Length: 120
Image (cartoon, rainbow, N blue to C red):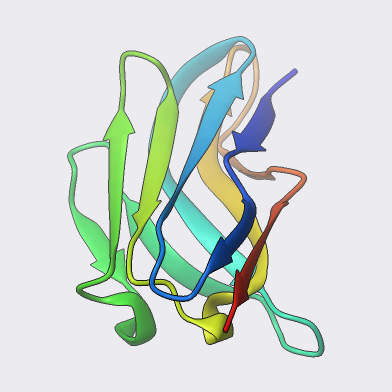
């Protein structure tokens, strides 16, 4: 069974930094993209950043230049380095990945979410 487990969220002052981590575990054959989404109260979930297995990345315009996504394919792990945080970055951040498990087809998986709160 595939699971995504996030860590690294918390409370930080505006201008500060946080680093989120997400590990995919289970019997995995391959992972295509890994990425981060977020959902603020009263808003729809939105893409923050994602990375393909080859390292191609894309970012939401609102985080370009402040957030950096990286991944370690040997550890099935993706990171999100968040700098210059703003109060509007406050949200629950979800890890997502497109994974092919042993004995299964490609599917999208989600983590349980980690809250990020940026105080002004």
